[in-house]
Image 1 (spheres, rainbow, N blue to C red):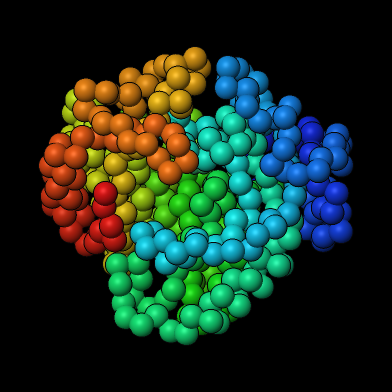
Image 2 (image 1 turned 180 degrees about the vertical axis):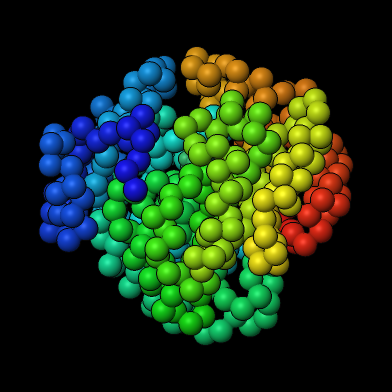
Length: 355
Ligand code: SF4
């Protein structure tokens, strides 16, 4: 799939020294023959790219025009327990989209273009070895009834990555052949190339949804909500397991009414088979003080939804950031209400976890 030029139009590729020794690296470079190539020691240290907090224009341009190629050095797995049992080593990080609440860019500064890791064969091999060591899933749990689930898209959006190279195709093929494990990733972008990947039920896509009126403001450069809902049937028919990721749930005047309408829209759009396999996760907004300050310079309208200190409390994160989440007592009530609305409108859609 050719990505819309306003999303990705690669003019410059920063690459680590070993990239061309990998087939995936050579494939990607051949795909963008006219792009300027700039050697870098590490995808983590590119001072001209990272940062730029003060200039949204610069970092949106960087997201569009720059691709970074490197390798994933530590092929380690982290236990998760929410959307997955394990977080697999990433095959990319960074994103061409620019959701106003996104935590991904915080790790490399705000202009965080897609960095693709070209040692995909090593990562797929590491996943096979790790799954082989686990044996069978001891008992069904909220994550899955049968398989160990690996999150493969923690640091970006794999549907966009899949338009650049075949890393996602290789991951889907890897899980197809592992009897006790399944891959899973959340996405805000509809890439129909994936429909040809033949996952045979072993990759779970979680389409992120929120009321369209809010998504239009905060989900910058993503696929419209109606397109994501419209894609669910097609992806299930193509052999994916498709769940919904209601995230972030943002509280504002009238939020319940908008979510009810969204649930109705989902109910109208889905045919019986997708409904039968449908599950959801619900995650209320966590915001961040530093991100708020950056957003105020380029997208203050989003902050009208995201920054509501009267209903939020601060909490220092492990990384030393000041995060904001809804005050506990209110959030508990809102969460309960959200689940009531969901159970009423989409009774077949079990909730895997909600917080
Ligand atoms: S699509 Fe996901 S990774 Fe990309 S900016 Fe939005 S929240 Fe972040």
